[in-house]
Image 1 (cartoon, rainbow, N blue to C red):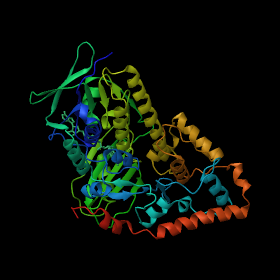
Image 2: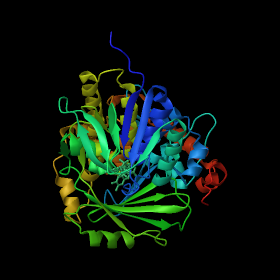
Image 3: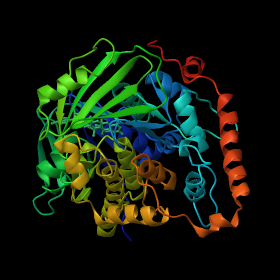
Image 4: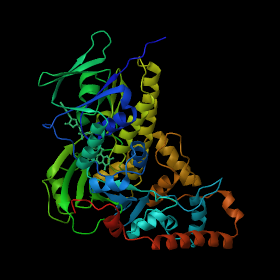
Length: 497
Ligand SMILES: Cc1cc2nc3c(=O)[nH]c(=O)nc-3n(C[C@H](O)[C@H](O)[C@H](O)COP(=O)(O)OP(=O)(O)OC[C@H]3O[C@@H](n4cnc5c(N)ncnc54)[C@H](O)[C@@H]3O)c2cc1C
């Protein structure tokens, strides 16, 4: 029988969103038998973006036992019920991808099948009218309900979120070490990471190392040369400009994503400021042009100067290599379009906690971890590529590239299946469910050719009454909810306000 080590040493390199999420989770949930250290350098800034989230963050917060009001007030957060895609399909039309479920489905067919027949008969309105979160987002309303919560996420201040998590980590015994990592020391025999050498000369040794050093990937790539699979042929944007502005209007409960000539612009409203950015392809737009485009499309006084961020879309070939696990941007980056970064960090952290070695690291654990991480990333990648590829825009070289580019077979299959049959099947490692795929495919103009025969079990009158009942019920429900901003004022007003 193997002997059990008393305290396994976990070293987290990097103190951005990923590092502090990991430190808070490990210390709070498994800290008794772990010695957790986090090394970060005040001299190396975090990337400083990543302020829109998706509803899965609730699972993470529930694990940490966070109070929603306290967390929102501390991070200047607002509620988010989806993303409004403006000018993505063409330069005239918008659509909203909400986090809610569409209408009512049955065992054989999703709601879109019923909606499609209604649409063909001219008796169905926009599909979002059948979803409370969609309607509430459009009307700027929000509520926390006693019986069931709305499917919602948050817009938050990334710097304050890291601080908030840091306090939790500190409370549960995580040790913060200030210093710049100068060298990663490897064991000559095993190739495992032995320790981090800091510029100060301090040596931080450990059993498991979490690489949370952002795009640098100091451990996973710099030391272990794990390799990177590029997705730039599917996701041609490789640059972003980020700038914060003072608020000029009350915040809306959704992220805005506005397509431009060679990329798209985000607007992420917090309680006390607006986060703005332009994601673009450097092959099609210069940094100067991107800054000009962004600055001419924002309101409000600038709080900071526009910053240029360069990146490669793609994934690390292994997320877990030797005794190093990449969490955060060090593990790869898909795109900020559907705010999936923080979700993937959280998945990596929870997966690692579930597979935490007792003694020796198991090769089977590493293989399983990497398989799961790869499957999840690939599915998210497909969902994001969908938005670009399904455009009808023809007004720039960038959009023509996106429309005509080769796409992953897995995505081509999903699109064909939907077009020919209205069907969407959620795979076991899919993040986005049927309602998400349907909203984006319809929103981007992919109209299915036929619906499931079960819909014809209903007479035309029954179908009309079915659709109307859901629509009227949704309207009635939402009109009783308070205005989003009024709700924030009494629920989670930030001290910064
Ligand atoms: C343009 C853009 C927009 C994004 N928007 C979203 C979004 O809306 N939603 C979302 O979920 N995700 C988003 N992301 C992805 C991701 O969530 C954020 O970028 C997130 O802030 C990244 O956190 P991180 O901890 O991985 O990296 P970082 O914030 O870069 O942190 C890296 C840390 O490593 C430390 N470090 C680096 N080198 C050393 C060294 N030598 N010694 C010591 N310390 C070191 C740094 O000091 C820092 O603490 C976005 C990403 C980009 C690029």
